[in-house]
Image (cartoon, rainbow, N blue to C red; front, side, top):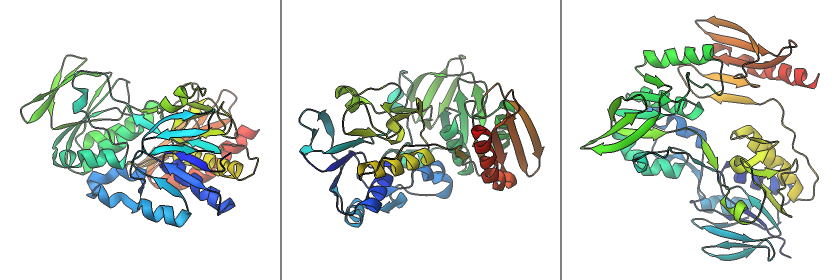
Length: 381
């Protein structure tokens, strides 16, 4: 049997896993197979590339060749994986078949786009490669339609606005960041954006998009129309489950893993945006890093189990940055909120009066880590 650890994918979770494997074992064979360039870049920087004037190539922090040499790994960039032969323990790719001893699926998630006429005219910004493809058009665009008022859509909206663009944001919900924040706090951030010139259309969806001369004409569910230079979608991510499904591995919303990051198939694991952990998808950096640390130990002879503490989520909106934790959008919580010119502090309590969630902004963000400890103590009580 092959002793190779084979990892499909080269994103943040895969790179963290390689780092933790190498901390435990300098010599175990590690092979990376990925459809992209395997260059390293900081994905969160995609939320402010336009206001900062970044070019796609400037995001690269380490080339694939540098990474392969520094970590002593075998690398196969621009390589498509077509299937997994579990019986023969082979990964089938466009560069041939590779045996595996243990296989890790770090296939990530793709940006969702609404199934409307003209959807091929919509851009997404979920990777350096996607940014590279639309960089020129979005840099030159003056009027931008943003589909989605969630975390990424809100961050990109502020970035476009700070870059001098006129932005219209549409969302099917009734408020900004409705899945993350109480309406009162989402409303404060919305007010900041309105003062910057952003136009909002809530409880509205895109129905059709068509090219009209040098512009794009959008038709909305409320019957209105608008003309834009570019349309960007940030309505969420869809885990890449194709390989797992074809290999007969259990999937639900994501690839189902246990507390050791193991899937339903022997010696096959999953982590990152494609994995369903404790029944949840967690497309954030901290759970990906903790999962990579756990799996790195398990792939090198350990018996670690993933434990997830209360985790901090950062909303990268420079005019009103936010830190939040717990489940701030939970409608059952009772909130204590203090608003001031220097920011806000909001604490959410359950029906028993236990501290369960918080949101802090601007000058009060330094409180976030002490509040995190309080949430953890409350959950442990």
